[in-house]
Amino acid sequence: MASRAKKIRKRRHLENQMKKYFRILSNEIQRQFSYRASIASYALGNIGELLALAIIWTIVYKNIDSVGGYGANEMVSYIVFAWFFSFLTTTYAFERLVARDIHRGTLTNMLVKPQSYIRYLMTVATGRVVIAFLIVLVQGLVVYLFFRDRLIFEVDFLTFILLVLMLIATYFINLFLSILIGFIAFWTVEINGTYYSLKVFSKFMSGTFFPISLLPVFFVKISYFLPFVYTIYIPVQLYLGKISFVEGLKGFAIEILWLVGLYVIIKVVWRAGLKRYESVGI
Image (tube, rainbow, N blue to C red):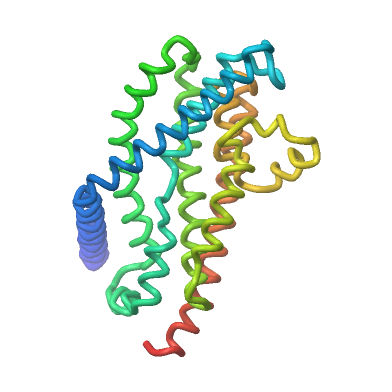
């Protein structure tokens, strides 16, 4: 009887936790919808960036048939797919939310509640992804109308599932990096410089603007020791059929290893930062 009662209590506790995080998720979705004009402007800006890249590569291919082993249609497909992957996995300056909680003392309210602040951040971030996905549905139609004759659509079911899993892993890698940058606020007031530098560096090394293979061999070798190449370049290579399914699985496995490593670092930095936060005034 005691064992059964214990199981019931655990189940109720789990249900309460699920309801609590669902409310956080729902509230974040509603909050994001209150910034409709800002979201629309951001979406238009992203489409403008994509069109600019497509125009540049169209000009490049006027007098040549191939660049680094990519034909014109392959390059356009690369740019479009990389752009979608990047847009769906961006964290929208999430580190500023973390830094704001620390600087304004909002974190204190979180600490006295029976919930994990890191899990809270992950739940809020999930709410933002829902909005991003809805935007992509609309953007996808616009982009398709522009590039329908040049896009490559040749993905089997297993590859599609793997790409979805890589998309999820990529988002959480970006999220964990954002949280780590946000935690810098435990020690300093300004984090925007670090955020901007990492954003530019990650976009470059992930292959968001062009395939990493076009860079000098030295940079390509370095990129494989960083998480960024596995977030954009490897998934797009898999999508285009330039690497095998097994190589895609290997890239996904490396993403998982990076996720575990980043999560461990987050926990270590969180404990160190919390000690400083408590000593300052909590």
